[in-house]
Length: 399
Image (cartoon, rainbow, N blue to C red; front, side, top):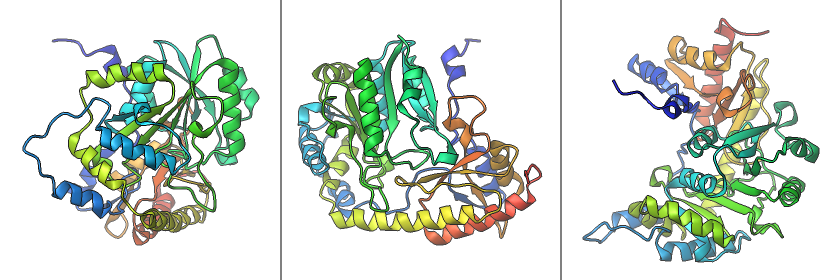
């Protein structure tokens, strides 16, 4: 029998999806499963994008340019300009979701065994992308007790080695919802320039900033045009996760030229997704205003409700639509499996993402979970009721 590759065995399971078999069994058993584990919004996709798909008039579904349709890239130029990001169409590569953009960035900028600093907890799939690109992630830990604030600059300096080639951030953050301050971005800029590093910023949640806060892209920072790479996606912005359309932005000509080789190797981004995404650029501002208002209400219900449960700690996120919570349990992963397999309340249970998978440092996040507040408020309130009852009944509860 042929052997499976070492890389295949080493590839981590997604903490967001690894408990799906438990959820499927719960559904088969007649339970309602409330999904707080995954960032799949229930917000409706803009009608202008749906109409573009309904009204497609083509006799051939052809390849696009490997960088994406020029008309879409030109539309993105105007969109980014409205967000204080000045690029031209030649500095954008349309990708198969933000995931491919991250992979292109890693494979373009880093050699095997290069080290990349990443604040943890971080988007869990960075672990998998790093393994595929043969890159070593060097975690710099942020703490729930400090609401995941970025560590001081000397902590970064302590991690720099001759193999360090870059820093990756997600802003606003997945899984924490943390929104970087101007001071923190300037700190990152200083580190990048001091050590001639790449800075890759996953900015797919830029529209979702709350309580008067605003997002600033790393491409608007002066002096790091050659170092800065932005990853983007339509998935969350327009509630179009299934479109699988993202983008890589960079003002460094060599980075774009090299990333294009990888883009050509996979031929092109999806035609239907680009058609919908180009149309979505016409989405009125009122759509985002309404969505942000809705997410603030959902956030407040979920986070305040979690903190009202005895023993739970849940910092208030400044952006995105996720929150991390520390639970009074022996193991969050065991609890997340137990609540699906062995618990129900009023015929329902809750699915969450165990926190350990969002860390690179072994042993961290073992009592944490990521919660996505992408459901309507009545569902969130019901989920909170279930969680409170489940924590009371869980045999591994810690007082």
